[in-house]
Image (cartoon, rainbow, N blue to C red; front, side, top):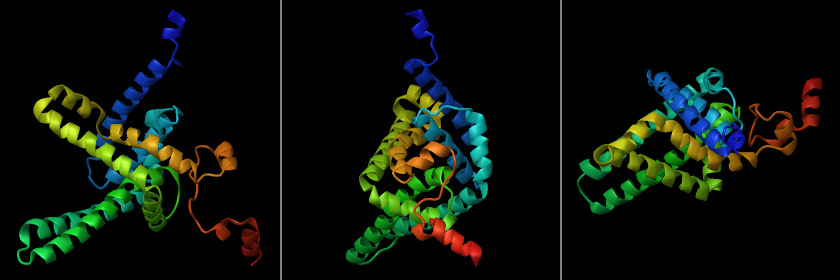
Length: 243
C-alpha cells in the first residue's frame, strides 16, 4: 500500500506534479512578459508546455518553455502585436459607440452590434492563435486564418473555452474583494491555469488535423496544418524539383 502511495506514477502525485509545473510556468510567463511585446512568445511557450501536460506527456518544463519561446519568438511576437493593435481598436470603438456617441439610438445599436460581433471573432481567434503557433508551423497570415477557421468550425468547443475562461477571470476578480485565499491561489497559478484548462479542449481538436502516421513518427514536431493538399503531394514536389 505504501509503495503505491509513494509511487510517482500514482495519479495523485502526477496531479501534484502538474500543479507544480503550472506554478513554475506562471513565474516564467510573468518574467518573460515584462517587456510587454514578448507576451505573445511567452504565451505560446506556456501553451507548448500545457498541451503536453494535458496529454500526460511530461517533460522538462523549464527547458520546453524556453525551447518554444526561442523557436516561436518572431512569429508569436508578430501575432501578438497584430492582436494587440486590433484589440485596442475594437475596444476603443466599442467604448465610443456605447458611452461617447450621442444621437440616434438605432445607429448606436447597429454599430455597437457590429463592433460586438467583431470583438467576439477577435476573442475566438485569440483563443486559438497562440496554441496553434505552439503546436504547428505556418506563416503568420496562415496561422491567424487557421485560428479563425478552427474557432468557427469547432464553435461549441470555442464557446466552452470562452465561458470557462470568463468564469475563471470573474472568479479571480471576485476573490480579490471577498475571498483573499483564492486570490493567493490565483496569483500562484495565474494564466497557465487558464491555458491548462483550455489545453484539454484543444488537444482533441488538434489531433483531428494530424495524420496518424505523423503522430507516431514525430509526436513533438511542429507540422503544417490546413495547407493546400497539392502542395504536400509527393508527385508535385518531384515535378517542382525537376523544374
